[in-house]
Structures are given as C-alpha cells and as structure tokens.
Length: 183
Length: 437
Image 1: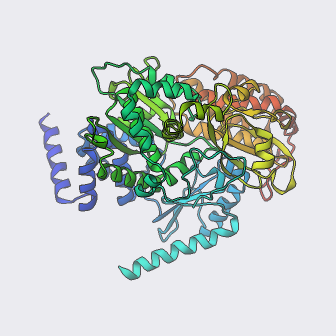
Image 2: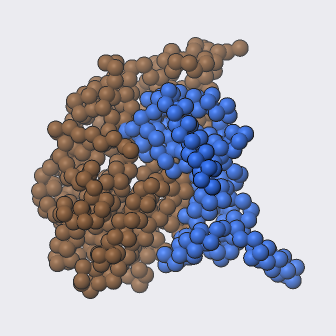
Image 3: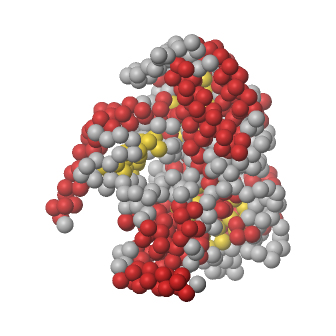
C-alpha cells in the first residue's frame, strides 16, 4: 500500500511539473466537467478534445484524463479503446479519412482512396515521412447524398473524384506553409 | 458544404427554414421560431402528448414507434430526475438528413427538446452528436448559447416558472452508440455497449432516471407539428404515418440529395422523377430503401409507398429513410461484402452471435468475392445470418443479418456466378482480379 501511495505521488509531481495540456485546453476541460450532473459524462468528449490538441492519447494524456475525472487509468483505457476516432499513436497533422461505405463506394469512394494512397505514397493507416498527412479508410461519415466524401481532420470535402485529390492535398500543404510563415 | 436540392413534389415542413440563415436566432424568430414552445407552455403537458399522438408522428431513427406513445410511457412521478436525449449519432450508411438539420436549423432541435421536456416533466436535455460532426456540434453549441442569452433556456424560461437546461455532447466514433441504451452508456462516460431491456429508457434511462430518447429529425419535427396542428400534420401523410420524411437519396442517381416528401410517396417516382433516374441512363439493379440495414428491393418491387407499413409489407423496412440506388453494373456480392464489413467493424462485441456472425460473414463474403467461393458457402451465409436474427441484445445483429439474407435470397444467381474461380463479372474498373492459383 505504502509503495502505491509513493508511486502516485511521484506521478502527481510529474504531472504538476510538466503540464500535459495548454492552459486554454485545461480551462476548457475544467468547464466541461461542470456541464453534467455526473462528472464521468465528460470522459468521451474530454478524450477527443485532448487528442485534438496533443495529436493522440499518450500515456500522459490518459493519466491526466483519469486524474481529472477521478477514475482509474485502466477505466479510461477501457473506454478509449471502444471509440474509433480515438488513437494511441500520432497521426499526420492532417488526417485524411476517406469514406468507402456503400453510398461513397457506388460513386467512386475507392478510386478516391486509391488516388490518395498514390499521391501520398503511403499505405492505409500510414503517415507521410514529413508528418503532414496520414490516411485512413473510414466508415460512413454522414455525407451519403454528397458522395464520395472525405474528412480532413474535421473538415468535410464532398462530391469528389479521383482528379480532385491533388488539389485538396495542395490546399492543406499551403495551409501548413502559411502557418509556418506566420509562426 | 452539402448541396441543397429541391423538387416540386416536396412538402417543406421540417426543411422549410433550410438555406435561410435560421441557425442565427433572430432569423429563426423571424421565421416563426419558438412560437410552438410558447403554445406548449400555455397548453400544458397532457395537451402536448395528445397532440403528438394525434399527429401520427413516428420515430425517424428507424424503428418508427409513435412519438406521442413513447412520451406517454414516462411516469408522471419519479424520485429521480427525468431526461430528454436527442440522438444525433447519425451513422447508418445512406443517412445524412440530421446533418442538414443541425447545419440549417439547430434551433428547431432546441425547441423540440424543450417541448419534449415540458411534455414529460424533464428539466434537462442532452443533444448528442456523433464525433465526426464537429462543425455541426459547434453550430449547435452556438445556438444553445443564444437560447440561454434570450432566456429560452435555463431557469424561468420565457418568463414562466418552467426550467430547462440543454447540454450538448460529442461522441467519438461508434455506430453502436446510435442504439438508445448504448448512447446512454456513452453519455455516462462508458463504452457504448447496449443495456438489457426491459427496463426501457422511459422507466430507467440516463443516470437511472426516466428518459425520452428521440432521433434528431423526430425532435426537429415536433415544433412544426405543434405550430401547424396535429390534424394538419397527420393529413400530409398516409394513415398511421403522419407528415413528411427527409428521404436521403444516394448512390447511382442523377440528382442525389435529401428531399422532404410526404410519407407514403411512391419509391419508383422518388428515384425516377425526384432524383432524376439512374445515373448515365443505366438500368436499375436494386434499391436499399431505408439505410444499409434494410433488406434490398428488386426493381419490380419498388412501386410502393414509402411509409413504415407499406415498405414493411414489401419485405423490407423504411428505416432511416436513406434510399441507396444501385445500377445494373454493380456487383451485389461486393455490395454485400462492404455492408457486412461495416457491421463487423461496428459490432460492440458483447453478444456472440453478432460478434462472431458479422466476422464470419465478412470473411466468407470477402473470400467469395475474391473468387475462392465454394458452393456450400451460399447456404452457409444464409445459415450464419439466420442464426443471428433475434439472438442479440440490440438490433445491430439483426441490422447485419437482414440485408445479408436479402442479398443471398434475391441475387443467388449472382453469387453462383462468382463460383469456380470466375473473376467478378461486375468488378470496378482498375481493381485487380484474384483468380485461383
């Protein structure tokens, strides 16, 4: 028992010395837990918002979320592994999610997906060497009437063809370059 | 931005504020918004429930249960707080109607939620959107903040004694969470595994309190029913199927889109006139009438009215209203394989028939389509699917089995065409063909 307490206090110190989240996110999560009658209801969105900032659910993120909700890290892992948008290793800065479900498939979703693989030179679930893009095939994203559709992070792009792929990638490359210049 | 479509046959009730900037509260008020909830505050809970019953409005999520009946099941007295949940976890392949509601008319969802709360005596509502709909969640959150600012939410709403709070919530990717009890688990910060029923949510739901959970389209329809009157709303549809429905037509049609048509609108007309017919003048092979979980219909079976009862009689289901049109150059085996792959991916893994059944069906159909099928596979697919039906805690098992059975039953010849190492006769261009070594 004594050993466990010691370890916890060490971890706590670690998290105090190295903040896992930015002050903005920390404030947002502080407000989030107050929204609900039960604190734990904040868990799923908290994981997603944390991932949006950090890029993935690292051990440190999981530990911090567990501390904030007041449940065990194992409990957090059990929930996190259920949801398909949550990931445990980094994705690209722009995560390209191509829907290939029925409505998209019928209108060329796989052709779009294959073109992304060619243009990016990565296999499914792969990340480009510069870390800019990652690519994955996803299930229905609720844009069936505007198929084929993709999401880049949270942005929808719809009514695509394989030919529209290079243009989309260029837009995000420019976005990244402009951000770098401004930074 | 999702393209808005229109057709002269449409009866715009739920969509009447689309494309008019109604996401902004002043515009929503200009267009008659928040009048229905004021009427409800004056009339009281019993009147609201009776109006909903009389309107013939049936759940738009897929099950088609009477909304008024559902609300009437909530006990009047309860030791625990009661809750309203709006199910915006829209994930059924072929379905994108709620997407447009959140985008163009988020206040109608808020107004409907308040009315549901008044009807059953709940003081808190949750609006749950799938995680992928982040930009729509932000729209919804802005609308909720506006409603709080105006005193339409919070304590003493509209200057009365009534209180109503709304909390928005994001999912994080899970089809299964669209099932009502799984959604409650997710909202409680758990894995989205369904609960055993009974007890039903109306008695024991979120945090153990009596809960009404309705699809987002159902809730967005509520203020319109109240505003136009139950009788007028019911008169738009067919008997026992009140009003209109947001039909999402996708796949091989000339003009895909979400069209608001009266319940009972003819499916053939919907495809050939409203959506402009099959793309490129091709022939029609099959139609999935209500989202990927509904059994497929053949071209000779589509001369039917699109309401819950008539589609049921035709051997399928109206489901979520997502009509997926398939042309004559599509491989049904591949289509079946893609459908079952989805369910295998989304099965939560709790019930064995669903977890194992979807996985084996996926494996068998994948092998089959690749040209390694055996004659016994066809009956084996049927056997697997039949043994999933009705043997799972939630409808996901059925949702996977029913369409699979439909494909095998109605397109047996096409399955047989894949046997003996024959390459897929309908393969998409550019896809390498596997052949027996």
